[in-house]
Each structure stands twice: as C-alpha cells, then as structure tokens.
Length: 101
Image 1 (cartoon, rainbow, N blue to C red):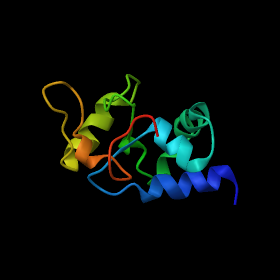
Image 2 (cartoon, rainbow, N blue to C red):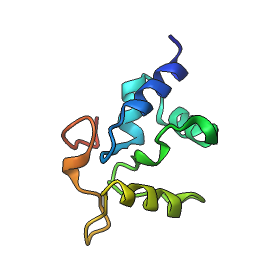
Image 3 (cartoon, rainbow, N blue to C red):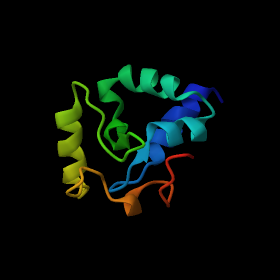
Image 4 (cartoon, helix red, strand yellow):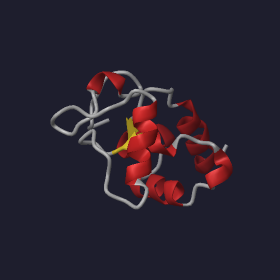
C-alpha cells in the first residue's frame, strides 16, 4: 500500500467529534508533515474525507482559506475551542494529547 493510500485510510479513521494534528497524522502515515499538508491541499472535494479534523500541534486551527469552514464543521461535531482558543485535549485522536508524537 502506498503512503498516500495509508494517508487516506488514516484520515478516514479520525472519528467524529475528535481531531488530530498534522504531525501526528504524518507519524501515523510514515511521511513528513509537509507531505500531509500537500495531500490535504489537493484532497478532492468530493472525497468526503474529514480534512477539517486535522489541526495544528497547538490544538488550534491553522490560518488558511478554509479555516472558517473548518471551524464550522468542527463545531457541528461538538468540538469548540476553549477560552484559550485551543480544542480540548480529551478529543485528540488517537487518545491522549501529545504534540510530540
């Protein structure tokens, strides 16, 4: 299986109401974080994959053209950032928040 196929499968596996980071996704897929960012940028709109469940290691949405939509999609799943702008660590996937992983 190619790295890109692993990426698609892993992205699809992020459960509703949870999120992961670019770095964690990269580690899970065995690629560099820049590759994850490139694949997310070119993800076909009709894929139905939950691209919006990927946020940065500070547990915040990275500024980009789809950030407003990303916030709305996460909010629709019950994920809202706290007063510090960070999403709750208990919804980090796989379980347990550790930005270094």
